[in-house]
Amino acid sequence: MFKKNKKQTETIKEPKEKKVRTVKVGTHKKTVIALWVVLIASVSFGVYKNFTAIDQHTTHEKEIIELRLQDTNGIENFVKNFAKSYYSWNNSKEAIEARTQAISDYLTKELQDLNVDTIRTDIPTSSTVTDVIVWSIEQSGTDTFSATYEVDQQIKEGEQTSNVKATYIVKVHVDADGDMVIIQNPTLAPAIEKSDYEPKTPEADASVDADTVNDATAFLETFFKLYPTATEKELAYYVSGNVLEPIGRDYLYSELVNPIFTKDGDNVKVKVAVKFLDNQTKATQVSQYELVLRKDSNWKIV
Image 1 (cartoon, rainbow, N blue to C red):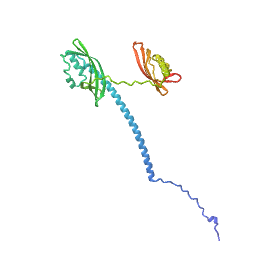
Image 2: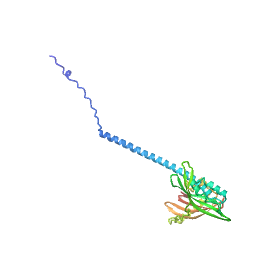
Image 3: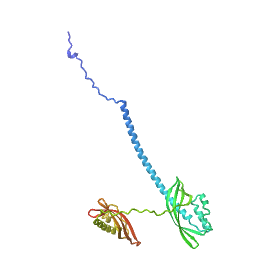
Image 4: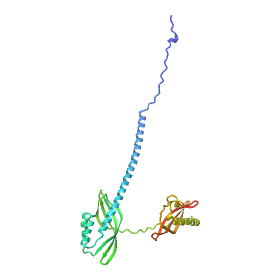
């Protein structure tokens, strides 16, 4: 009887294929990640747009400021030229007609009619404008500006001459192309007066001892003798950086006036007036300085 060889009858088992473990990402987690991506992108875009908008806004504001400055210069010249014609006259028929024609270049038709009889042949005076000062120009509407100005006139009546000063306001309309016209007749305004303001006078600091005051005063006297004609190289020995620039003037130092020294940490502050003689005009020039002094091996203006 034929017997199968046991080795032959054994089935050869192939090795099992090793399964690769996979991690499944749930739909919820995918959604969260997507939302985070969208959120970060949105914030980044928002920040970019914000900075872009700021830059554009700043540029726009700069353009407006520059335009207004340009317009203001034009309005100032326009008002000055108008005032010279408006406030100058004599009582001859020819002069009155010339004045009427001159001011028509500045006034609306309505204002031209309003000013027809302001100067007549029967008035006993003549006027010459000696000065026009434009004190302020303020925007009072989209295309309208209010100009406050002062006029100095020399009024002659017979053999007598007097000086008259008065302040007025006019309104000027400015077209988009820069053309101008006065739309409100000169109207009296309060005069610009001197202010009563007086700055507080600093007091000397008792913590600055007498030796320091004397030493610093001697340094300042030496410095201001040199300063008017000093070169940049010479100034570098006395001054740090560009605190004081060369002035290159033919001034002769005279004296320090009431220097006031105060302590400022390791430094000393000084407020002082300095008298110079101007060799060209022969007049005395008084300049005021507020300086910070420091002493290492030598005193220096810092």
